[in-house]
Length: 241
Image (cartoon, rainbow, N blue to C red; front, side):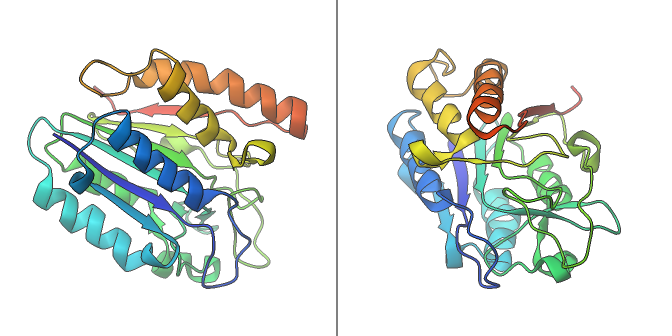
């Protein structure tokens, strides 16, 4: 059985900068999961904008998943939107619709908390795709006023358990960008393209994460450099087997 939580936050209650194309990307990922990968519609939860509050994330990650996921299942998590650091602790957070970078501990949903919840599931594999960034330097990240951006090490910020694999859009000191002319997040554009056109899907509908990463990484790096004069290097983070 396959289960998914898909989150896209483009507009924020706190009038934070828009995360362009986040909602459209989330809806498209949902369609790919059900249409291309064969996920049952009732097993795919899609949360966008004001339906993706801190409480919604807690509810679905910490109650809905444990109540539904059976041993041997596959779980897919996708997040498109802003990330934020806690400048004091160096922890990385997803910024839900009601998130406030000034009070990120109270209003954000930390990667550590998410990875802990996912690691407790009896799933065979948990795949996480994050079209976000966490340093606070711009792009798809925000930070409390007056705080300096951080250099994050996403691999050590929050460790993942052995059944979890994370694909992050950029390294901890970079920004994650939108691919304006295509109307997508840059990372998400190539992730969807790979699912559609490349040999990254197994016959049972699960994803070959290493193949997916090997396709996405050079494409994202190349476009970021050529079109935006920027460095964006997607990261593959795997739990210790």
